[in-house]
Length: 377
Figure (cartoon, rainbow, N blue to C red):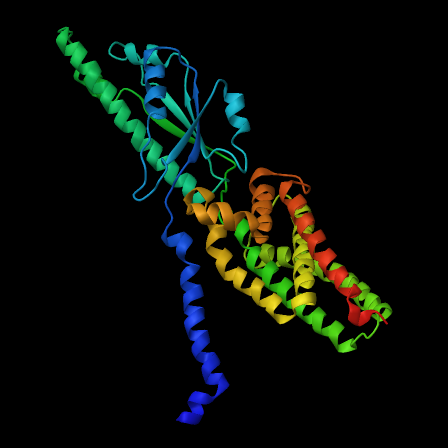
């Protein structure tokens, strides 16, 4: 028994049990501690009458918070025109826009006679985050239903005080004098999780390719700088080829096996190729200096990032939102794929720029390793 307890593998197994369970528990913090905060919502009030202004004021005064949240659930942005609000329904913009139509007040005041219920339009940005956008739609419908019932009660009290006779059908309409109608922009249709299907294949394939190329270069055992330059040049050429194979290969599998069909297949294929190239160079830069511990860092990063990628930033704890999410390189793949699929973005977008910067950082580390003293002969 003493021999077993002294065995280094038994000790490593004990340490692994303690730390792996700790790490796997920590990775679940974002999903367990998620609370909606500062969800961006636009407001366009086209009605300058009493009820249009009243509803806008009530909406902007809504500072309800989720349980345990420090900030209000919604962050309101008022716009003068629908065109301005539409520009904010972007991949990083508002989750919804509320549009109060012209003559809204007039339609409510004439409802007791012969008018019809006015409708407040809700534009829901499904591409921003499909799950959260659906929740936003439900919450906004509930908010407006309460406002409508409140206005209806006041209208019926005024009519009763003036002893104005009205039909029972009109009284029922006045009790809830307006309605909401949702329309969807950047609709995900049958592609709700399409942007997330590339993440794991690209990341894990890039890790494996980097590891194999590293050991291929190490097997040559370069003893001088000239040989090392040849090895690194060969690795760069192989990385370029394998990036195309991985990028377009992943897209092919997603099309044929998962059944996703996209409007910009070629553009998405090149974007996945860029992401693969960037990740391989980033991994290669670290592994060339740190060897296997460098790979362990990015292996662990996979587990930390998986729950973060699926969640909207407005659901994340402040620490993860401000200090973890901005520095996760796979976020550029995730967000870039979302822009291409749901927003019809061009290949060269903000996330392509970030991936290119990631590529250059990795490439610089990778090339500088060839100037170490051990290759100076």
